[in-house]
Length: 294
Image (tube, rainbow, N blue to C red; front, side, top):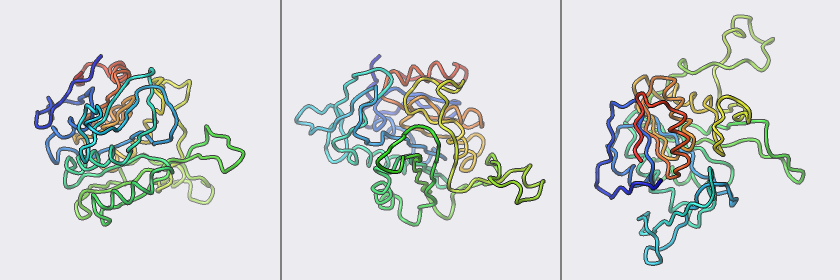
């Protein structure tokens, strides 16, 4: 299956009344074709630039005169070659030249009360903070969320890495939407220290979220590498949007943001350049209310 090429200035076939739209293609030209201020929550979970091979496709920055076939930031082109199934090569020679124009387009797409959640890890989060301060303004920084889990790395020569970082920026610090009461509550870690009524109700989450990864044998599992649990993204959407609002995920992967949006009565725009991801989302979402744009 080949990606559809969207030239700059061509309107992407997006109907804001659709419950969900899933695009197969390079997210930058598709983002450029979407209308400004249409999105209330943008969740970006880009590759983490780990330097490791993950199955799927390789995205490599090269000058246009050396064969780059997709126009990018500062005249840099991007050549995409598919190499393995259900994964990607998490190495970018020009990682920030790749990510910066996509973040700039996301800022344009956010409504005045909109919120960006950028999901990275310790390798890149400090660079991302500086970049987002420049793009959004430091006054638009709302939170850094730490997602902690207890599965995976068992390093013996350093502290094992058991968390990822989510930077939260708002379009306008005077107008953003945030509804803490709409968020699913979580158990108290020491329920004996609060009243029985409080223990039964649970507490509001803080900026540190303890949540397990997607179980390798659970019903939620799609088989897509780096799939994030619905519970993580659901919390963001609950707090930062209302029913009927639009949720954007330009690095959709297995479609977790779309699944959470559907559960909560939000609309979703999902984009991925990997045909395998597109097929995973086609299988994950029934045809009712979801439009697939190959």
